[in-house]
Length: 126
Image (cartoon, rainbow, N blue to C red; front, side):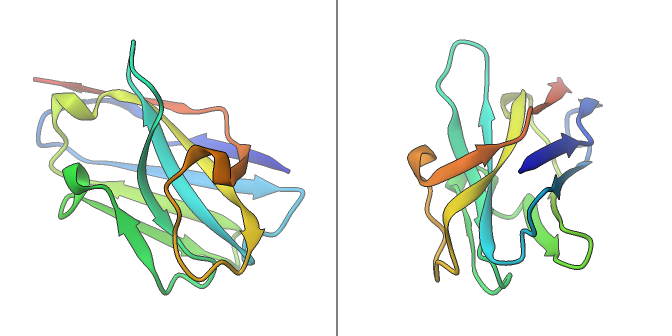
């Protein structure tokens, strides 16, 4: 499985970006997908996830109301719409595939994800 994260860039505070996570080698439709981020000097942290059906999502508190995750299982792609970006959102953003198929809820632990994309840099200037 290969995941390709894209859509990052440099944006001013209060701006928007849309990240994409496209998969090859495996259909994503049976798996939850998580977005994580890692800022310099900090550990990688969970941001948001969506279940295999798209019926359930889970957001970390700091992005609620600003970020929206969605998926298109026909295109084998997951999206992260990021609005009202803040400088503290600056990080490398990674998408990852849940280890278990058809899990009914999103899990936030890094160890529950077994395939990771290469990351895309998001930089928010103040």
